Image (cartoon, rainbow, N blue to C red; front, side):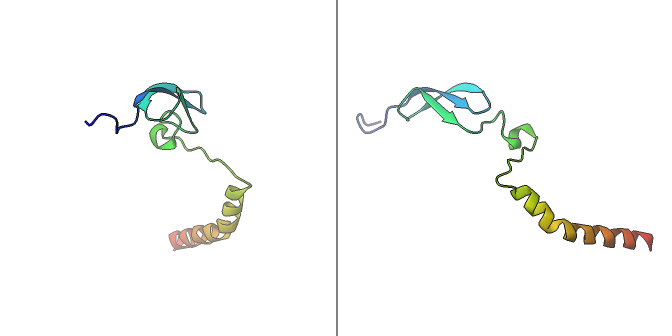
Length: 82
């Protein structure tokens, strides 16, 4: 590698909002990197889903599509009876 053209790559501590800390290396300035989500709390890695409701969006979505879901269920049950 050519000297003087690459950024400083040094160890940093990553601090997640869930409280998990781990060490890695980065080019950021400083010793600590704060993140909102990490592999310990991300739903893809944990298999658990966390819904973060912002201004009632989940409730609005379920309310909006509740009638459509009820119609689908009604057609499934009426088809099963026949």
